Length: 206
Image 1 (tube, rainbow, N blue to C red):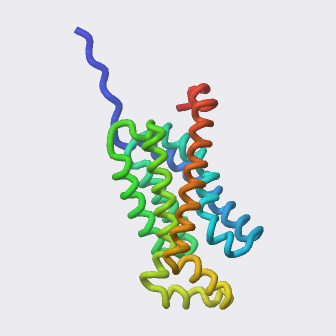
Image 2 (image 1 turned 45 degrees about the vertical axis):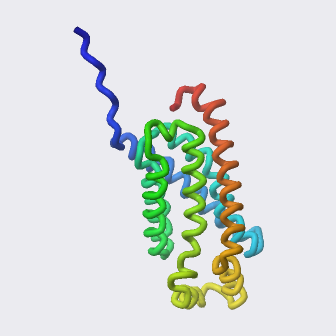
Image 3 (image 1 turned 60 degrees about the horizontal axis):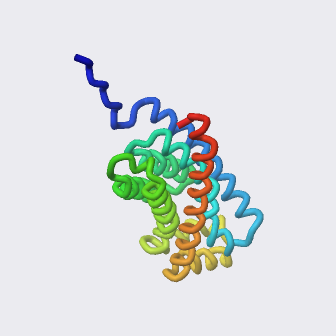
């Protein structure tokens, strides 16, 4: 009688953590580069409106390959943890908490079998992730606005602070920013999924 093949382990293994670490390090480099370029090359208004969406656009292909390669629950949480630690290194400790909560929400969104292999489910998860990132950035404006703005006085001009309040302190602008992030995240994911089908899978890299 033939022995049945053992099913692959469901939880994240060491090789999965290594893969997630490598890809997330590359994603963080892209995020920092996008933020720097958008900040230098554009107006503050464009920066606040689109920088998160542009990050999502450029990170999409890397995320799609990473998530399909690992394809296990916890992928979003590890990704959120890396992003939160980056923000912690830049002095925004509160954003680590935001990202951990976002990682848990996205983990719940992806509950089920082979959801990371499903372009629809994985795409929904990716869009939700960046929407939470976008709106999470505005949390200080609603929970501890005075302390937050006081902490920016040395680095921002009075006009800069007023612009920040206009874009991240009002519900109408947050809806617009969220919509831009959703659209660009969806495009980034679509590009990544196209690249996955046309090149990565043919090369048998996932």
